Image (cartoon, rainbow, N blue to C red):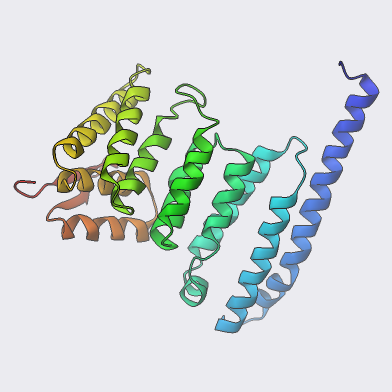
Length: 266
């Protein structure tokens, strides 16, 4: 049924009103925290950090309950930005840990499962810092139900992220092999250098795992991808350490890439 001009206008007004109310509600929840931060010279205490986490939990609960009014991608973007702020607060995370990371990812998947760029950041936050790769894979599988080989663009990355979580954090080499093979298959549908590289590396990793389920080279390649794909220094340090523990080494190049040294044998 076709909407009349009046009904379309009414729908638009309602959408804007709901978005404004939600923004106002979230802003109101943030005011006490902002007042605390304004106190000159005041250092964050464990008690304050715990209160801030509870406020953030309330905000995330509110975002989860918001009605769908055409702003799902905006909410997903907003959630990712707030996740960056949450992840980057080293002092607070030292007190409270990363317990809310899965909730950020859950909102993004519910609101915009085709938000490919979010999968990498959320995978690092949930698997690496919160220590819940099982939730990462569960939510990634949920998002993959809405993704095809060509929609959104270069969606093959989601399969790579899933394979990395399966291999590095869950020890599921068989599942990882299948994920990397799917990533390679989807990447071959594109005709650009980036996609060709992803297809080649993904297939190589799948082949390594087929021949040796505990392949150190496959694990190093996965950590190297995390190293190259993120700009977060903490994540890079973790990736470097894990590669060194596997007998290899990695160095950032001046061109923004990475130089990898593999151990002899596999």
